[in-house]
Structures are given as C-alpha cells and as structure tokens.
Image (tube, rainbow, N blue to C red; front, side, top):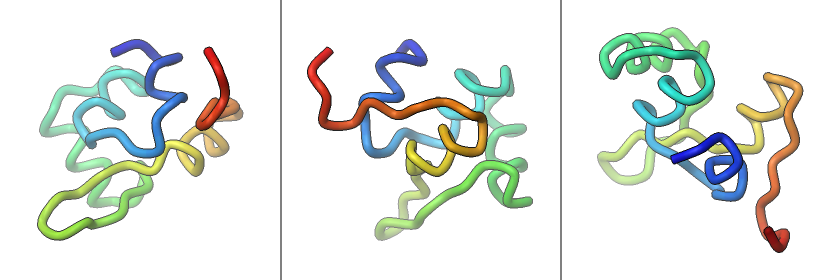
Length: 68
C-alpha cells in the first residue's frame, strides 16, 4: 500500500499506519498506538487507525470519497 492509497481509505491497520507514516515495524507500531502516538479506534476486537485524524496530525490531506 502507498501513502496515497492509505489516504483514500477511511481506516488502515496499525502495522500499515506505522510502516507507511512513521517507518515503524509491527510491534513498534502497536506500542506507539498504545501510547496514543497513533490514533486508533476499536471495532470489535480489531484495532484500526482512522486516516483523517492521522493525516491531520501529520499535516496531510485525506482523499476519502474523492476520485483518484
């Protein structure tokens, strides 16, 4: 997945967010999420990263719902 692809989705996984936006490995990404450095939401037993708050935190613009 590319950064542009991630910015076009409403949520991405914690490992994807960590790798794409911060260069983190899987465990480091979950550690950052646990600390609150990566915003997360819990859906059932799954932890996901909402793209809009993450993009805003990094000064990026999400492209959700826009034609590519």
